[in-house]
Image 1 (cartoon, rainbow, N blue to C red):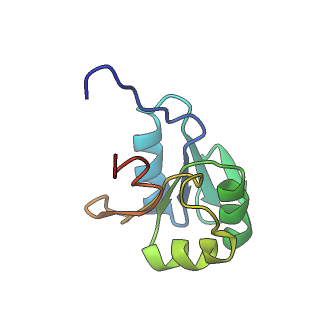
Image 2: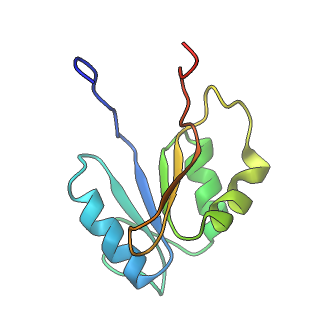
Length: 115
């Protein structure tokens, strides 16, 4: 799309396993401002460690941070369901398999799609 840029500021890759953390690290390295958030005790070498997956994902979401969950889509859905509100203002949320072969947009993907 000519003339448009995508703002990835605040993008958080959330990884729950070592393999997921490695993929998240490779991807985040190519996106200015992106961070890797990893489950403490399972994912090393991250920007941010956390111990409670649901609480952490909800905090990112309510702060308006775009999220790429490098985990099962069901984990992301169940974590964020209680804090869903207005689809017009919520950040983008994507689930990605640990091998990077599957990517599923979950929320925030249709801003302005009907214009």
